[in-house]
Length: 204
Ligand SMILES: Cc1cc2nc3c(=O)[nH]c(=O)nc-3n(C[C@H](O)[C@H](O)[C@H](O)COP(=O)(O)O)c2cc1C
Image 1: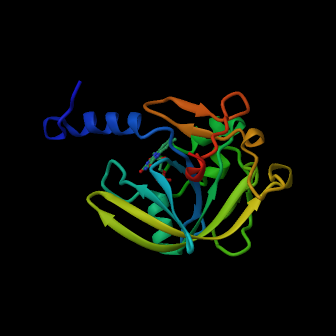
Image 2: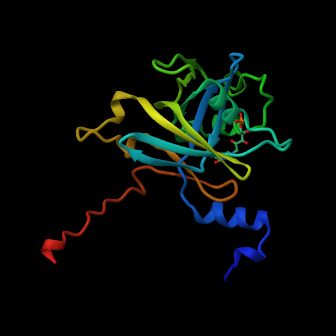
């Protein structure tokens, strides 16, 4: 099958994009509003941009009533956020935080999660997540109906037992979850991780 985008409607394009751009990492973003209300939401249109400076980007849309999603608004107004890693044991709670709660609702309470203070930013970290990444707003690009949020990483919090001697997080232990199309997700664990060494051109 071939699909010329100009013949597709918005939903068809969305369905093809979210099932071909896979697997996607999930930024589980915790923020605080200027009124002090804690918020959490997952976003999978998310990527690393650069390690020097350490930049990431997250694409956040608008609500049905055309207002910016709470995460976007909080980052714009307060200037920082925390990315928490979603592991398999946290998927149900992550899913609760994807609900369109009113901005006056504390989503830590709704999902029964524990906020802990960050060291360098105002936004809280999620205690139950084994990795929290403190970020400050770098810039926000408004493209069509989306806010492309660029964040600069200020600090990583990683549970000791997850780090290996080479300085990597051991993904066999982490059990991170990724997003696929529709309601499908994938789990990364020892059963599906494999090793691929790059060819050495000098030896060919
Ligand atoms: C796994 C997952 C990934 C998502 N990715 C995005 C995304 O990349 N961009 C987006 O705007 N919404 C995304 N959503 C929907 C938001 O999480 C949802 O609209 C949420 O209610 C926004 O909350 P907020 O208004 O508190 O920011 C995703 C939902 C799920 C479950």
